[in-house]
Amino acid sequence: MASGSVDEAMRRAVALAARGLGTTSPNPVVGCVLLDADGEVVGEGFHAYAGGPHAEIVALAQAGERARGGTAVVTLEPCDHTGRTGPCSDALINAGVARVVVAVPDPNPVASGGAATLRTAGIQVDFGVRAAEAEAGNVAWLTSMRRGWPYLTWKFAATLDGRSAAADGTSMWITSEAARTDVHALRGTVDAVLAGVGTVLADDPRLTARNLRDGTLAIRQPLRVVVDSSGRTPAAARVRDGAARTWVATADEVGAGPDGRVDLAALLAQLHQRGVRSALLEGGPTLAGAFLAAGLVDRVVGYVAPKLLGAGPTALAGAGVGTIADAIDLELTDVTRVGPDLRITALPRTRES
Image (cartoon, rainbow, N blue to C red; front, top):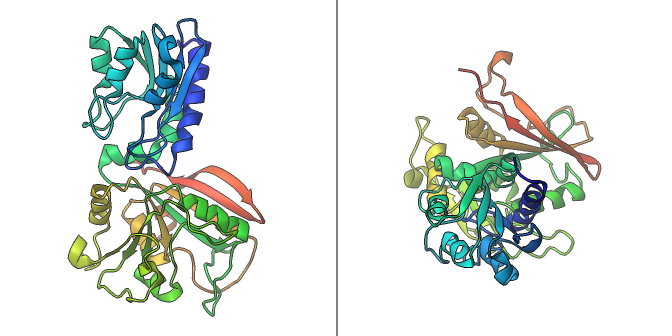
């Protein structure tokens, strides 16, 4: 059983880790709190950006000599390899830490092994404190590393009766400015934004992360991915404007599925190879249906406006559901009011075999 001070330190470490969301990829978010031999907090840190110092290094720098004989509380198993920075396991050993408390083991075979190295050096290592919270805060990276393709969120905006546009095709704006601002914040936390070529042809979106107050671009932009089986994306499309990196993914390049279109599983695997750990699927309804039918969506975020249209395109099409027994069941995890709209977050339930 963890002491109260260690448990509280891990709660703080999880909160610190969240500060790195959107800036650390392809690395994980990690938080660390250092307690001295008397259980007092003497250092804390988080991994702020890829290539920068890891959470443990920041916390050790703050603690100095007070780390000796103390406890490092960290959300992810300390790394044990040399990349752009050195092994955190060695840094903890050299600092004289007596104990390391870890929430979640590192699933990355390249960086894992820190716990074994620490134990060989005589340091006590314990796992599992607030593991569920640390897992939730790092879910995209952990999921991606365990299976080899990005954590995929499908985002849609619709009226209360499920319409994504009016009968005449107009769709600006279904949701409020507050909801659109929230979407841009969501884009800022992912590595890639995906849309189908149909959406590009119909709406000509930028797919960038912006500050809607002044229109300025966020410093870090996700990769823009157009799923375009036959290469129909116009040269003048705004996704080609140079504001962010863009990949027009064709069936010739990625590989084709049985329907002759881009193989979606192969697409995700290739995105993972490009360093994408989290992706946001934005449009349109046919592409969303294909990803859902293939079981490739990890999370659904829907912005629902208090409007009724009665006709017009729906937010989802062709998801492989022919009868109510085939419905894709979701578990609601959050419902939040954003301006006049609702943001609903849900996870697809795993079907019983």
